[in-house]
Image (cartoon, rainbow, N blue to C red):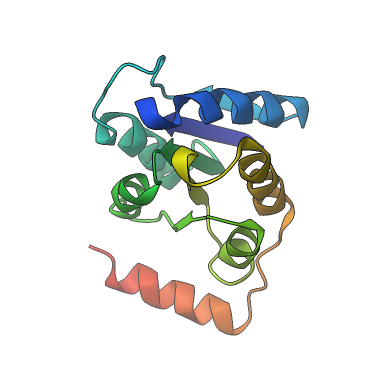
Length: 145
């Protein structure tokens, strides 16, 4: 799978660890930055990931920040992106099963690295259930700007 990843300074350390996991699992990873823990403005690194997912250049995207909130907001402004803010394993599982999340947002300050890595694994391995959830996905897409 082709997966994009991007973070601001507050998510940089976890981004680097998640890149290692994704590569180890056999995925092709495109890193959109940032390249250090020096302060940056997160939209500059998150929007390009979301746009690449929306264009179909990437199958999925992972974005990170301190809380993950702003990153999810930026990603979800891009039509065709369904970015789930995940804080535990169940939120990752439901984000895929019910929302067909093609991106996830994680907060480095909100969880230990082990939890973040497990969230990514679950999100990658969980299938979209379709059914009644598909109707809702279509409703989201119809209302998107």
